[in-house]
Every structure is written in C-alpha cells, then in structure tokens.
Image 1 (cartoon, rainbow, N blue to C red):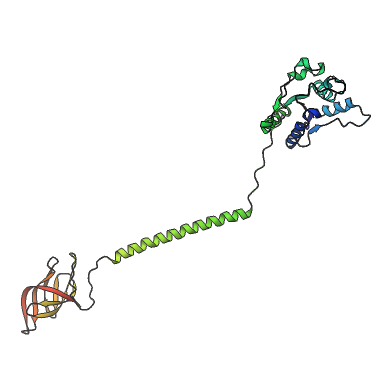
Image 2 (cartoon, one colour):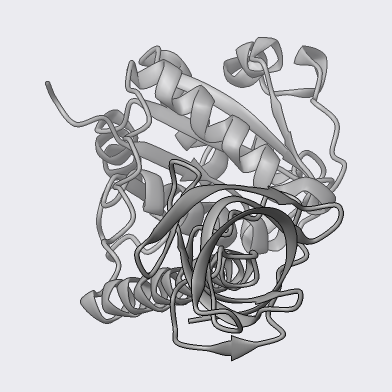
Length: 298
C-alpha cells in the first residue's frame, strides 16, 4: 500500500504559528509524511512545476485559513490570492485540479469564504467541509483533524503499546510487603489461639475434682453434692475413737478384718456405716449402725 502524505498550505503573515503547531502534531501521527513551505524554491526553477510535483505527491492538502487569508494584499494593494503567481492559489488550485482531498482549516475565528469571493479556479474550495481549530480546545480539534485524515487515507489509528513492565525492584517490594502482612496475620492468629487454649486450660484446672488418696488430711470432708467418698479414710466413731476404713465403689467397706456397707449423705456430710467394726475400748468386734463424720482421708 503506497504511503499517503499531507501538504500544509498557509500564508506566513496569516497563520504561521498555527501551521507550525499543526505540523508537530500531525508529524507525530504521520511521521515523515507531512510537507510544507515550497516557497524556498531555487532561483531559476519553475515554481509551477515544483508546486505541481510537491502537491501531486500528497493525498491530502490542508488549506489553513485565517482572518486575513482572503484579503491580504501585496505592495501594490492587489489581493495576493488573485495573482497568477501566488503560491497559495497555485497549491490549492493544483490539489483541486488533481482531485486531491482538500480540507479547509479555519483558525483565529475565520469564516469560510464564499465561491463568489474566490478566484474562479478556487471556487470549489467553498464547498469543502471545513474543520475549525480553536485555542481553547486545540487538542480536541486536532484529534478531529487527524480522524478526518485517517478516513481519507483509509487508515486506522495504531494501537498504543502496552505500558512497560514494572521493575523487579518494585516486584520485590510488593512481595516483601505481602510477606510482612502475612507474617503479622500469622502472629496474630497464634496469639489468639494461645489465649483460647490458656483460657480453656484455666477453666479445666478450676473444676472441682474428686479427692484421691494422698495420705491423712485432717478436716477434708468434701462439700460437693456429687462427691463420692470412695477411698481410704480416718473416721471418728462415737465412744470408740478414730478408725481407718476403706470405702469401696460397690458401697462395701473394710476396716482391718471387719466388713459392712456404707451410704454417704451429702446434705448432712455424714457417712452411715452398717456392719462390723473393732472397738479398741473393749477389744471386741461389734455389730453397729451409726452416722460417722469424715475427718480426713488416709
């Protein structure tokens, strides 16, 4: 597909500043494809042929029109646009004759000239759709102009390249931050878990436990209703003194060679024995049924 170029036609005294700004913007979109300033023609060269070659090598011509574009005159007070050797007239006329796309670009609040106000060879310019370029919305207006040229050329705007990948230092920093956050979360969970375990352990340790045989403990009769006195005890029997006794889980007891049954009253904190016991006062074994106060466990 042949490369399609753009020719910028303008008058220096009318719109030179705009021509330079447009050249920079258009050249960034169509690099190396924007041409302007054929006024620097070598002495002795046929300017008509040079203009025809330069304009003929383009596919679009931008006619930049300012407020003085139509009325600007030479030293003899003749309007330049009506002179046969006027560069602007030659450039636009060549483009119209060769059926090159001509886009009028209005700057500085200029108005589109009518066909009657133009030389006969430029009358067709008044029927071309113009684009206005304003200082207050320059970027947006230039974008519209670029879109118009893309339509004329049958081209699509190139896709912007993806942003460069972030440096490895940034990646390392992100990974480090994530690691610190995860570490902090892990420590927090460990602290919470440890507190829960400690609480459960403390609650378990404070629960009442059934007494175990730890040797004689004076005055250790239990208060819990669900207490079971199974084990070895030192009991106080009225008129008989103290006696060692083993209380079994089947509610039988044994004291030396004597045996019997037992019942425990939690409400009265007393042990009821029914059976045989040795009486140290008489040295005999006697049958008895009595309530006994638990004083200590063997």
